Length: 233
Ligand code: 3SL
Image (cartoon, rainbow, N blue to C red):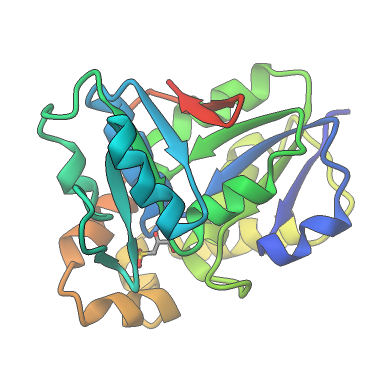
């Protein structure tokens, strides 16, 4: 039977064999939600870059520079880390270089996997269908916050486990814990996340509409997939 596991922080990735897995990297607030939104609105590619200066240098090569540090758009960057900045269609056909505190780092660390795709609530059903039809074992890598666990990425992992539970096996309790949390939260995820660390952190930025949007399932069908270090739809 195909298996699913949940890596609650990129710091735990060394515990998993990656070679036979499809990894789903998730950073609900807000990196992977932005990436999915950007592809749904026509960007050609996203190059995830862990290092800020390296990302900035991509501007000279014609890339749109995107992302955040401390949740805020970086000086000199074209775009920040709100999904609403990626909806205009002004990025159609363009290449993005993207760096965020945790999301792009989690992608970087996942590169040893057989396949890496990008998940969010916004493309949840497409991701679930893709994983169900695929042959590989599955690992959901939660970006967390600076190596620590967060609730919103765990909820996404739980949603995937809940939807695939009849078709997959697991031998660790992380998928089970995530599934239970998701079932507790699914009636009102915004409320459930109210006291979570990252929602508190983001509250100073006044972006409650980002949070509401990022936990809304199935806005888009696109699945970003990593190919030679570049995400393509
Ligand atoms: O850590 C990340 O990758 C971000 O998405 C963080 S924030 O939501 O922009 O603060």
